[in-house]
Image 1: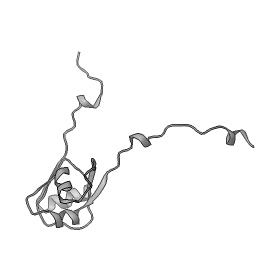
Image 2: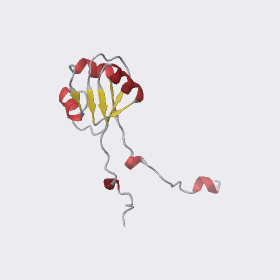
Image 3: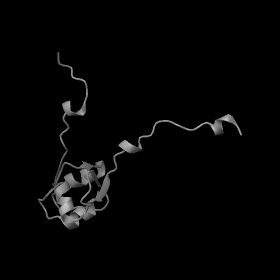
Image 4: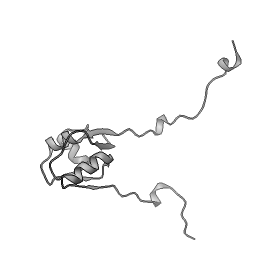
Length: 108
């Protein structure tokens, strides 16, 4: 048997640190929420659109939305963002603290 088949294959694996987002489409948001509602992770869990263990959710642009919703603290695709804003809603991105990311500080 050749040497390259006998040596164990090792290397980097990102599996333990991989972040998986649960998808939620606009048609489901439109059916579940009334106009003017603020949609966040807790509201999605309360309506049963995601499981209670969900941590990361991304709103995708499948379907149409005719209600003005405020999406707060969730990742949103560019297609979904344009449809939400066209319907009169808004998207508020989560605030990322630069000091909490563990990066090096430029101060003295």
